[in-house]
Amino acid sequence: MMLFRKLFVPLLAALLVVSPVLAQDVSQAELDGFLRQVKTCWTLTPEDAASGHSVKIRMELDPAGDILTTEIIDANKSEAGRRIATGAIRALERCAPYFFSAQSYELWKTLEIELQP
Image (cartoon, rainbow, N blue to C red; front, side, top):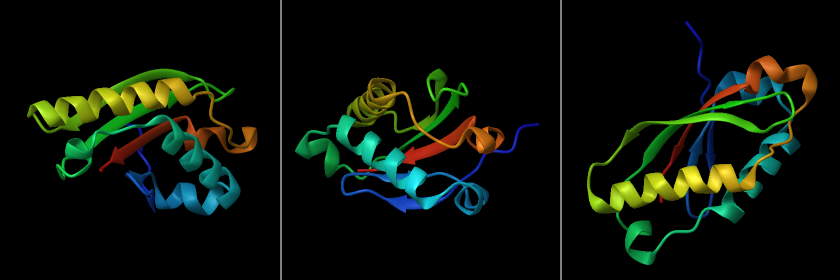
């Protein structure tokens, strides 16, 4: 069974949850870069931003930081929830590749993140 890592790191428009273990072993600069990158690619309508809905996504990355797979783990079933989930996946895919240390690949190859407007 794979361990999924969660670290609470706020964004202006979203909350990204990635793991405490990751935070200890991956540099803060790498985490900041990841968050900046995702933030620039994820857009929300004012209504969706105010909805309070979140989406949990599992993503697997290759050693170069490109996305291999994305999977919606949990999302609100409403129309706004579907738009948030679709937009989050689109943002993650649009912003790849992500840049982390090659030495810590085992820590970041599978991430579970939560985006919440």
